[in-house]
Amino acid sequence: MDNSDHGRGLSRHAMEIATACLTGGIGLVVCYGSWQLGIAWEETGPASGYFPFWIGILILLGSLGNLGRAVILKHHAGEVFLDRRRLNLVASFFLPVIAFAVLSVFVGLYVGTLLYITAAMIFQGKYAWWISLLSGLGVAVAFYLIFEIGFQVPLLKGPVEAMFGIY
Image 1 (spheres, rainbow, N blue to C red):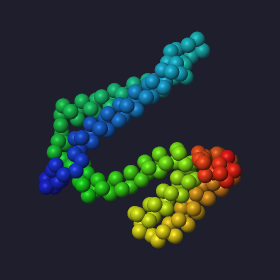
Image 2 (cartoon, rainbow, N blue to C red):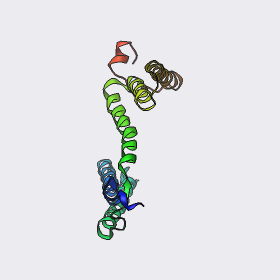
Image 3 (cartoon, rainbow, N blue to C red):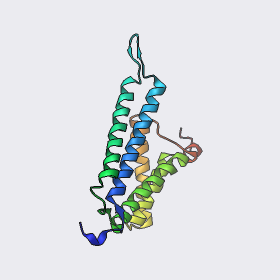
Image 4 (tube, rainbow, N blue to C red):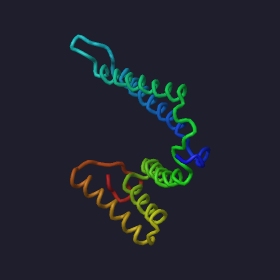
């Protein structure tokens, strides 16, 4: 690793701590959800949350081990995980995906897909707006035909679909 990148970007040490905290949070969520289902051993056998609870405990223990190793040993202190240029590239991909997920909750998956594909092609791919719009519309229609008609699996819909009477 080039030492000139030190201090510029996201450090590997910080990423190890963040990853351990994230996986530990997942372990806690698994344990909590399992506890709500029941984690006891009943007359007929284990309750439905018994095994997932112990999986959550294993995830949590592994995360605590990784967190402790990252904080105490500091093997990779000073190493750059992502420099600013690569961090910007990752953010330019990851942030629109998050925006797509959040937007889809409010406007539905089909309209969210149309907007995401169109915006990604215009801003990241530098395509003409009309090609991007047609591509986004084509993907949204293809999703509708595949999931709603083909597999008969309803996907998340919003006010635009309701305006067209699609439920």
